[in-house]
Length: 272
Length: 258
Image 1: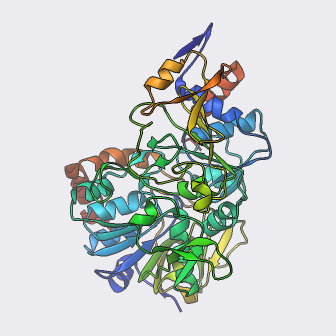
Image 2: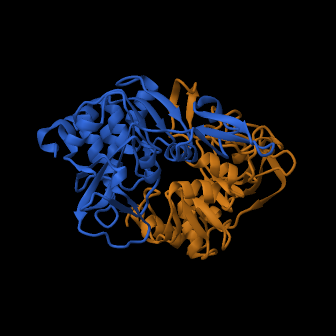
């Protein structure tokens, strides 16, 4: 049975220094509130896995929580650069950041192998590119059923996966809909799972493009309305594009970023 | 700005319109944000109403009325036939070879249409400028039946040797794709603010085949960091029509507004 906890309780109980953590949500349903709580609890040395680091990991990286990043596209969608990510890679600030870089398809397949309980899976990709030579956990193998050469990618099994969803029901099952990215794979691949939700409802209504995550897969459930902002929760609130655009200025300079951390994260009134 | 009697347009508008005209009805097109997205949505309102758009966020056969800021905007999800998971996008649609056309951008491109979106300057481990990286581009370049690259032409971007091969065009020549198991045809068009380049059928080297109205071969040569091949008969792409310009501008006015 899923435990219902406050977000600070869930992060304190389940996220530890040195963990491999996946916080997924492709543009939609990004678990920002949970990341902010991780920053607030000053958790360190995380190996942070995510297809698109987005603002959420830019903030974790800038705050010094991450020692290794496993990712596939590190930009501010539609806006430009992630400055904290760049400053960490180019200048080791606030600490050196080891990277393991994939393609979206490659990292997706690493989650699939992890979710499926197999050591690796195969895919078409990487071969012929320079990424093949720079990236760990990718290899070339020959098909056992013919002569074709194909890429293999290692499974990934995060210590903890955190996602945000629209709803949970009274039994701790979770429903999300709209763009669902790799959340299901990231949940199945993980040893422990935290889900933050907009609200708890009595019964789920049928919806198009929805998936249900049964409570037996979830370690802790937290009710956090607005927990995906400034990304969005379909049918609850829109993406705050202005915050994505403003992040470019907020994050460009280390001192401005430090001010943002102080006023938006560490300030008592910013904590929920 | 270019002038054609009373009508003027920007180089971005020209690139968008030129890219849009290459799209065909009933094709399935893998789209990214920016000019590719604008071109694809424009094509759906002009020459290719039944074009099927797939964004890597999983929105399949989407019909946005405004330009999204990000590939996962609510507008794309709500106007889609269906929204599919990332495994379905990459493994079942792209990897299986079901996508006709992919649109790509580039920070650097070489004469074999190989693309760098990973870093500029120094080394991979210690880059001068770190760029976002691969995303969906390598598999789009590998597995779409063909790809169109949309990129501004200048000496910073069109270079003799790119710093990192993020996505493969034709590698080092004609057999590279086959030798590495890349099944699509590769970059069949490169649309720039000066004109259009296409790979030579034998050597695969990018060759200037078209100019936009009011651009010159000299400009193309001066903005290319290698000795650019020029087709024997360089054609001129026709100027944007008033309808095309009106529609592009109306679309751009909706940018980021759902």
